[in-house]
Length: 139
Image 1 (tube, one colour):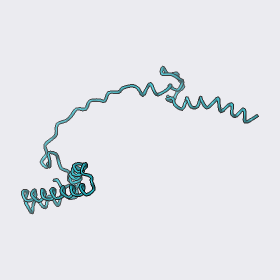
Image 2 (spheres, one colour):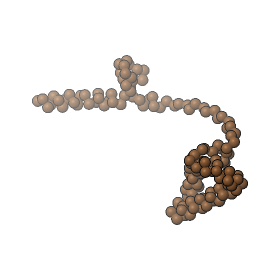
Image 3 (cartoon, one colour):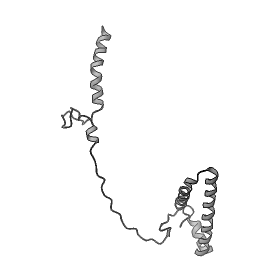
């Protein structure tokens, strides 16, 4: 007898619990125009279209230290590059840097050919340039 009463109460309360579980809780018990005492379904609310605010672009400032048209970052290897500029001179340093970049790009190309990943070769080279900038090789 007790289990029948318990089962009847559960059957009557479960739909109420499920419906309230899918509704918006407003924190106060006031009827909303959307529906229901808790705010109703969030389906109608989620269908509203929002416009993204427009973003104004700001012109770039021209700084002294640039590589590839943008300001290079000062990183761990930057003191070595500055020392190379002093010892070798800017022209010789640029030749050595170009040779190292060419060798590194060729090594990346060989690895991609070996791994069968030629379709991501340019992405890896761009990532190497980004990492070089972060580490300070491009100052």
